[in-house]
Every structure is written in structure tokens, then in C-alpha cells.
Length: 162
Image (cartoon, rainbow, N blue to C red; front, side):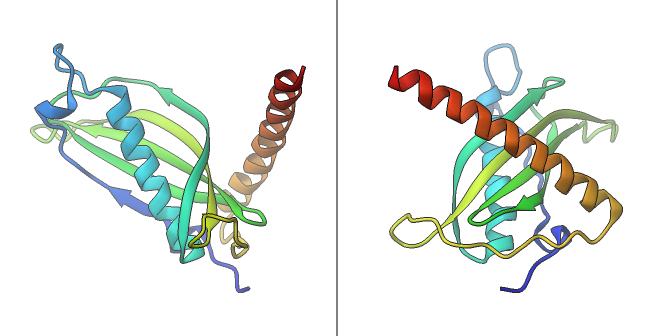
């Protein structure tokens, strides 16, 4: 299976936040941002594996600043690592005031996506070929996060059995 570079699967989405996305204080619901993060991560991982994917874990999703009605939200997703059937995707979210052009990062998230067949069973994915020093750094950091996810999952499974 031929590998792919992170640049080949990188995805960007930029919706305008509307009243329907907000709470009564005029802030965009965190769940709306989470949905956009998941969708954008899905696009990047589908591009990487050329197939269907499911979200199996949100490793981290940190809100750094709120988003308001009328602001543009730009989500940038890039695959950071690929293993047998899973991929880690980093998603950075930026808000932009369309009147001034002022931008601020609002969210960073790491998601694990798994490639699946028509029956929902995991299938192999191509390797991720680091193209730049930044790609190599992201791959190493993704491997560290994966080891921590495995430790946490094992602990949860052990506690559930006891």
C-alpha cells in the first residue's frame, strides 16, 4: 500500500456562525464546534485512506476562546500519524471577525479515526509519509499520545471488569 503525505489529506472548512449555532448569550455552543471538528477530521482521514471512517476517540479538545455569532470559523485538519487501521488527526480552529480580519485560535483537538469497510469492520490504511520536519515532529508526538491512550483504555477496561 502506497503511503500518503499529510499535505495530501489536509482539509480546511470555513463556515459562518449563525444564530442557530448559538446560546442565548451569543456564544457558539461548544457542541457545534465539536461537530465541526469531527466532520473536518473525518474529511482529512477519508482523504488519507480513500474510504469510510469512524471516530473512535477524541483524545483532547481544548477551548481557548469563545466564538460569536457572525464570526467565521476556520478549521484546519491534518493527519499526524497512521497505524494499522487508525489515524490521528489534529484539528486547529480559528475564529475571524469578517469586518476587521482579526483572527484568534479558539480550539485544538486530536481525534482518532478508524477506516472501516461497508460492514463497519476496521481495514488497513496507507502509511503516513512525513514530508517535512514538522510532519516528523507531529508523528512522534502522535505516537506518544497513542501510547497514553492505550494505557488509559486498558485502565478503564480493567476497572469495568472489577
